[in-house]
Length: 356
Image (tube, rainbow, N blue to C red; front, side, top):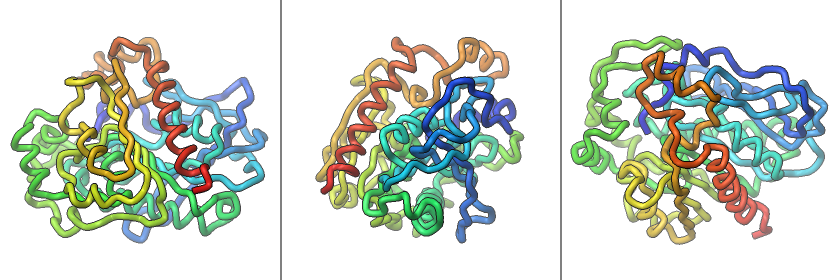
């Protein structure tokens, strides 16, 4: 759950879309959602079934990653659609999930993802990372805004709302589904696995603000607000969850996971023996009453990021990026994405469209 892509934040800053030549039916809009808990409004991207009458763009296209085509500010297609909330990984942003957001919109969902302040690319610190309660509130605020304001409120089926989270976003989705974390368990995890990415992030003494790397004090987990960290962040409006490589996997209490009362699909990236303990979700799936579990072979934690451009790996090395963001895993990332798309769309189709 450690932030990724920080060294490339400056490269990506301000890059959101580029011209598209071919038509595409998926609509996309950038909106702002007021959050009473934040000191700023949330920047939210919404993908949706559309009439394809907007400006043709690529969303998320930049120096590193390939974008996905969409129709900017297109008219909403007629009808009512389930809503899926997205929670990005730490150090990433909502646009980094555009590849799956587009597929979900094509499948008949309205999809919305905020950039989480304090844990997004170019704006991330160790102290903000464990504040899962802020991220869960972000998504709850987005639900409130979209189900209460035109034009979304007449297009969203508010009885069928799902959440899809990756990495730290997977922690967010797990808590929205009803799981609660134990601060002492999380501290023990970092004591037992000090080389894990999130634990080294806390010790690293660096963060990012306004797109610049900044020096910060080494962060001690015992300073986390225990009451907030361990509270319930369940949002009863959410009726299904798909959770990919969830951070905090070793810190959720068994009792709270056993009490989850909605369908949940846990997905790990990688085969047996190759999934980091930090995100290993099979035990969570065995505890939750209505849970499915899948592993995606020949993949790694970074496989959920967008498809990399041909020279991206070499470029990342040239600027000192240490994480294997674009390294090969034995399968092309586009192929991994196709498998993930099948798992995710199938799970939400079953949970949000079955009429249950």
